[in-house]
Length: 376
Image 1 (tube, rainbow, N blue to C red):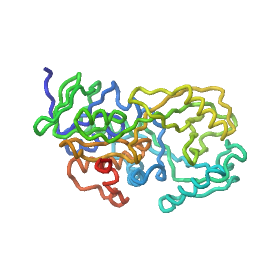
Image 2 (cartoon, one colour):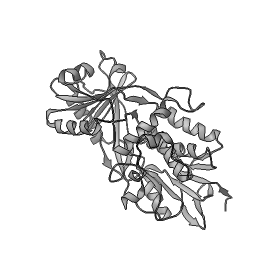
Image 3 (cartoon, rainbow, N blue to C red):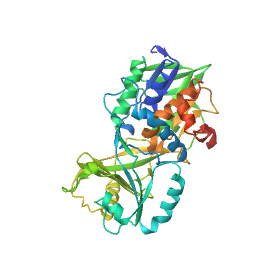
Image 4 (cartoon, helix red, strand yellow):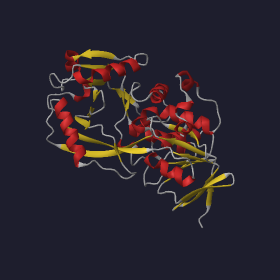
């Protein structure tokens, strides 16, 4: 039997959710961060083309995103040597048959951001790749920004290690059980014990929950695929907005001098090392070519990631109602990067029984909106 390693908190999963909460917890507690893969963020975080979009996602995500803005703009000293955000407008397109969707979204967001409604002519001016007569109207959010996902993720891991946190890779759980007042976590690389376990296992979170005997939250991992393709030679990509369908049927985003395109698919998958299918590629090319003056002749790269959701598409953050000392931090879907700073601070305050950060309270965050109890 290998030696037992004891700590205050074990965090399972070293993607953006696990690394951010481990970093926040390590300010006040001893923390071990366990990752099943050989490197952190392999499955989803490392495949994300994230954008900071305060108008994107269900209400709890929008609140958490607004509360995260100050962190993105002013990260802690030593967190990263480079800026985490860079300007990128967000343009949402609506065809004539989608105007109800646009009006509905506009009504929801009217009090939350600086969105502007545009007519067909204005759309063409902002997005010169758009085909004539494709969209009749749209919404522009000029406050959107690209997120440097790698810098954010590495910043959290750097801060975690600076606080004496320990990251252990290749540590997939074989058993997870409550013994007295502690959890015992058995892995191929050793046994770990702590009174609190944080389940930030991404697409595998329900499987970890079942291993611990916790409630099932109904998490569904969904495949989203993306391609990198050439941009038309005459287009300066740096000036283009992120452009997406109002019903999220596709999106197009500048990526250096090329274009990142996606069919914005959400196809249920078992947790795995997911890959883009030929159907994903064909669907993506068809939707993009219908909307934009682009002919996809060369696909430089393709990939897929898993975005995991519960029924209402809001995150799950809170202690289990079934087993003691088991904390859920799952179901961030496609919004985990932009909401990570605030969500991790909220989770750390709950786990350590501390006062909720003031900026999160000021943003109007309701903790019941993310509690696992809402799903039972």
